[in-house]
Amino acid sequence: MPVASLPSPFFIGDFGPEAYRFADMIREAGYDIWQILPLNPLGYGYSPYQCLSSKALDESYISPEILKNEGLIRTVPEKVRVSTIDYQAAKQLKRKLLVEAFINFIPDRQYRRFTAQKWVIDYAIFITFKEYNENRCWVEWPDEYKNFPQNRNIQLLRKHEEIIELHKFIQYQLYHQFALLKKYLKKKRITVMGDMPFYVGIDSDDVYYNRQYFELYPDGRPHWIAGVPPDYFSATGQRWGNPLYDWKELRKHDYDFWFDRIHYSENLYDILRIDHFRAFDTYWKIDSKEETAINGEWIVNSGKDFFTKFFKKYPNSNIVAEDLGDLRPEVLELRDHFHLPGMRILEFNMYGESKEHELAYVGTHDNESLRTWYRSLNRNEKKVLDKFIRNKYPESDVLNGILKYAFNLKSNYIILSVVDILLDARRINLPGSVGSPNWEYKLKDFRALSRRLKTVNKKRMRDKK
Picture: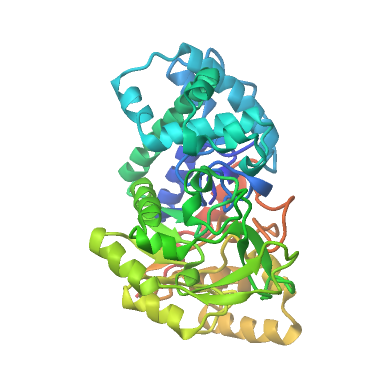
């Protein structure tokens, strides 16, 4: 359940009352893990995998109700119930409230300690400069802004001091509200599984301040970009556009940039899923001049060296490998060598034997909903699936039978998408495409989910032994 998809009444889901109510609902239904999408500031196409920062949070997740309860704003805006996310409306509304809260806020020691962190300062400068430059990508900024990481122009900081301080405050409030929610989830014995993209966006503070770790032209534009060749989702492949890492340079510095990203994300979540795990073994290299991902080449990476050094430094890390797609055997060998759980998607692999050391899904945010997927099967495929499920659960219809089947796999983790629990026909994202309706999935209220959770309940769905 993406946080953004919660039925919060301010155009987008946030860290407010609906998140707490959702926690109550799923705990009552027997669930003890909540998997979310990346929470970082959204960039191109509003994709949570094209973010402006690996550490900052998106200001749209701020809860007006909590700001009001803490005396930072006078009134909560009129509630608006919408059935899809409106990113622009959410940002405009919440920025106005955050400016009011900033004016009313009295800094304390905790605030000063948080805002003294290097990443907070760097992000506040970056996003201030970006807004000043009409939200263009940093590679298009005037030289004095573009080259700030090299010269640290003090006059430039003084010019934008007030807005920089505003952005420090915004991050403080976001982390404060998320910490409150995490505390409540812990009380409810709910584990949070977060998601970390393998790549970072070109238009991010990650690249802006760490250009030496990416394959860029001298002007900052990416020379080589990431994606995958033609696959199940797209006949022309997926051209993501993220700049490729300079792994030779990363190795020289013991992968410090990467280790910092993972360790930081692990402090934010209880379990961390690393997206596109296969790129630690081999990654698809595309010339940035190419318009599709068809033309490219697989490059062998040094995943074993990477994880040997990482687990030596962080031996207690709780990482899940997103190991989907057409993989060469070495990817699975790398995963298993470091005892990382992988993923099994029932829409791709309904009949295979389940294993304890894996995460089982009916579908992920990139898949069709269970209802739409079932409708897309041909007559023979439906016949085989119907017989398979009804032999196991003759009292259930096929779709609910599939959910019950998922609940009873051997897998240590079983994750059901809110889309599949609701038997919704909508999907969250279609890989290889950009724009609406991707990433706009939102519940208008909890009524349908509340009813469905009475059926899709852990106690009811588990076979009686």
